Amino acid sequence: MKAHVDKETCIGCELCPNICPEVFRMEDDGLAVAIDVEVPSDNEDTAKEAEEACPVDAIEVS
Ligand code: F3S
Image 1 (cartoon, protein in one colour):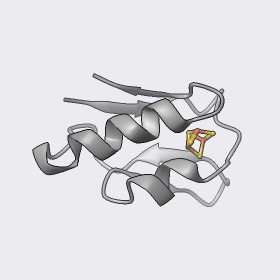
Image 2 (image 1 turned 135 degrees about the vertical axis):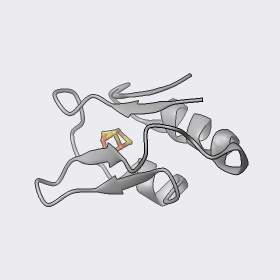
Image 3 (image 1 turned 135 degrees about the horizontal axis):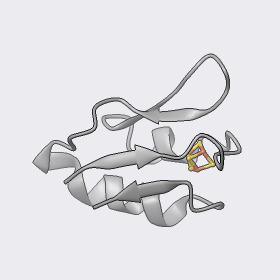
Image 4 (image 1 turned 180 degrees about the vertical axis):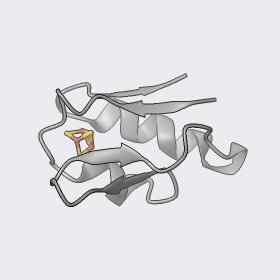
């Protein structure tokens, strides 16, 4: 499973690192990134939760 944040779409709401800090983090520009493209199997459920929670659909986990 892979995670990707579209920085063009992210508005920096910080929900994703709050829900799944193992997979997402905020950068100095105030926008989120996926720490590693590959999602550790233990974090797949919370990464999916973050994908669903993002208010602007900037996250793709698949
Ligand atoms: Fe950005 Fe969505 Fe995360 S707006 S900070 S990618 S929850």
